[in-house]
Image (cartoon, rainbow, N blue to C red; front, side, top):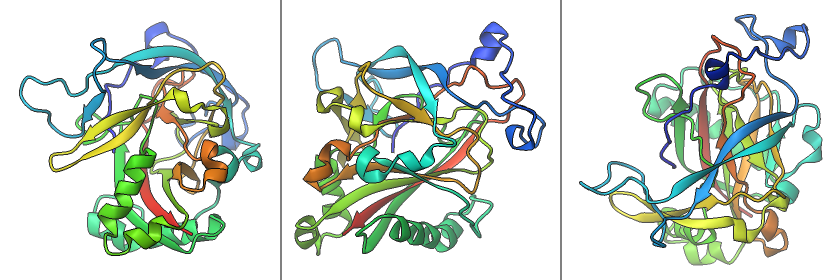
Length: 304
């Protein structure tokens, strides 16, 4: 889990920009009658800037010790063209690009306010979804989830910093931490870490999620960051800007849409395509008055 950075002011509030209306069709407006931004967009994304003193980068997940910065690395904001996945979903897959889209997924969980109910009702739905959509998968272990809301005072807000939730080292540690008695055997087979992301109040109008095609991301673009919990230290990956990276978002994501994000894959034949940088971003076309995005991401170890 990654601690959110402060959310930038939407561009329409800064510059008075008028929203772009793709068409007047009902699927292009939300329940408020506001236009859903569609198509390619150029937006600012926050990439990694190394600590000035050359030290190893770190980030505290919860409250940091007195007098210590929450993180010691900076941000490099870059203007990036982000293409729209809507209408070309079938061109991308987990093995080739490290993300995958699934549409029209029903759910019996609607509130997402009770932890026990989320685990009892939503978790089995996610497990079933993963087993049905990941070739070779024979076992799924859901190890945590995060709900993000844009309203002031929310426990977690959308993260506007390009990152990957896991690295090869932290993925192995996850297996050893969650299934210690079987770890040696499981680590000899294929294992993946996949996040299942969906909105809770779609269609998404503000702070959509951008993903990079993993095939366009170089290993040298990725920087391991110590992810410091109160009782242990994990590792995430920060991402340096590279103009060769290709970025996408899925416009107007609905509550029935699911975006699968692969953070790690032990299969070395698809190693370069085994990790997907992602970030929330401020879409400059977001219409004034649009409701803030709410979402849930469930993180899973997938074996087989």
